[in-house]
Figure 1 (spheres, each protein chain N blue to C red):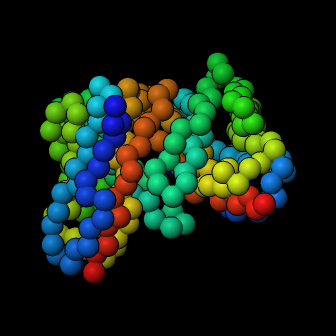
Figure 2: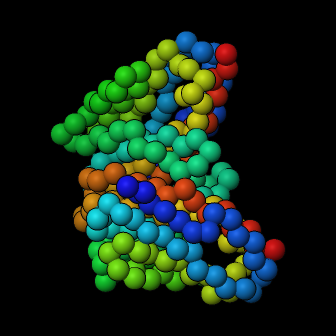
Amino acid sequence: EDKVVQSPLSLVVHEGDTVTLNCSYEVTNFRSLLWYKQEKKAPTFLFMLTSSGIEKKSGRLSSILDKKELFSILNITATQTGDSAVYLCALYSGAGSYQLTFGKGTKLSVIP
Amino acid sequence: NAGVTQTPKFQVLKTGQSMTLQCAQDMNHNSMYWYRQDPGMGLRLIYYSASEGTTDKGEVPNGYNVSRLNKREFSLRLESAAPSQTSVYFCASSWTGGYNEQFFGPGTRLTVL
């Protein structure tokens, strides 16, 4: 059974801090790893990491994938209150897979 | 483009009642999905449709049925609602599987009394 474990479950930081969110996994036939941000409504896509693209960056957010050690991290620098959300890690695995397996998420709270 | 739309936004049912959740996408995606999200459990896949005319079970299909009406629309039906089906339901779509991001609708908050 595929497993995705995120840590920490929750985190409180001050504006301007840098945070690192962790995602470790055990899956068969890894395809890709995705990060989503969920505020009060639907998850919105942040990054996809695959075997051919193990590092992504967009503004203050960046993510890396370590396929050897089976984990990914999401970094957010110079945090803002608008970064407060639940961050979800998810994986596609298996041949021809359409199923995303999600972790339980990390709740990030950024206080002024 | 509206993206992925869902109706209704909120619903309260009594145990044993039935209802259908509607989902539509206007991105010409081939694949569509239904998830439920419960506190402490994360998002779990109920059913998916890899392409028009096909549907498959996900992780938690019991108590649900689906219909891929056409390429745009994918509905989820609860035949006899139970309190354990109280949850937030999300529909999503993607170009295909494996290496494609899924786009999520705004969700339906369902309460079964």
